[in-house]
Length: 265
Image 1 (tube, rainbow, N blue to C red):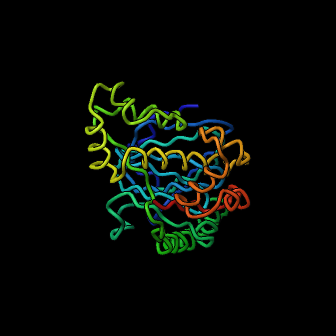
Image 2 (tube, helix red, strand yellow):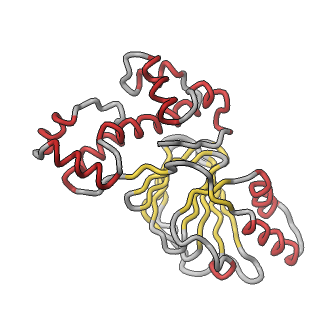
Image 3 (cartoon, rainbow, N blue to C red):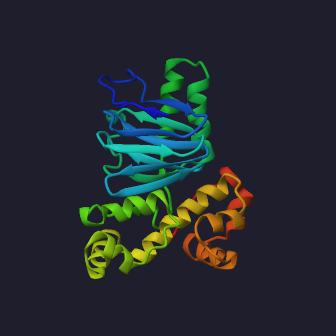
C-alpha cells in the first residue's frame, strides 16, 4: 500500500478549533512518500510500529511515543506490517510556543484519551475547543536517550546504508564494504563518525536492534529474531540487545505492542 502526497492546500480546521486527528488503520504494509503539511503534526501509534524519516534522521515509533513535526517539515512514514496510526494536525496560531524541530514526544494516557474523545464524541464547540487546548498543554517531550537513528547521507556510502537498512543481518566487514564501494576503510569510518557519531559497527548494531524490537513486539520468538539478524548465539544476541536497548528481549516481548519504545545508545 502506498499513499500519495497528503499535503493540504487549505487549513483542515476552522476557528475556534485548534486541532484535528485523522486515523489510518492498515491491513498490511504501508508507506507515505516524502510530503509536508501547512499545520504542525503529531504522529502517534495506537497499534504496531512505524518508522518516520526526516532527512538523515530516522525514528521508530510505537504506542506511547509520538513524533512532533513542525509545519513544513518534509517527512516519510513506513511500516512493513499492519499499523493503527493517528495523525493530529495543529493550527500553528494555536501553538505559538511549539517546537521548531522534530521532537520525540510522550503520549500520556490522558493525552491519548482526550485525542480519542475529540474524534469520537459530539460536543458544543466551546467544550471541544477547550478540550483541544488541554491536549496542547499536555504535549511533553519524551525522556529518551538517543531517540533516533542518524542516517549517513554521503553518497559514497549510500549503497551500504540502503542495503543494511533493507537487510540488517548483512555481515560484510568494513574492509569488504570498502572494496565494494571502491573507497578506503578509513573513509567509511570517517563518514560514519562525522554523520552519526558512531562507528560503522555500532551503527549496524543499532539498526539490527531496532529491527529486533519491531519483530519482538509483533510476537516473533527471540530465537527466531536472533537467527533472522544473523546471530549464531542467542545469548550473544540477548547481551547485545540489553546493552543497546537497556532491557532484555523478554521485557519487550512481555509488554508486546502496548509498550512505549525507549531506545538508548
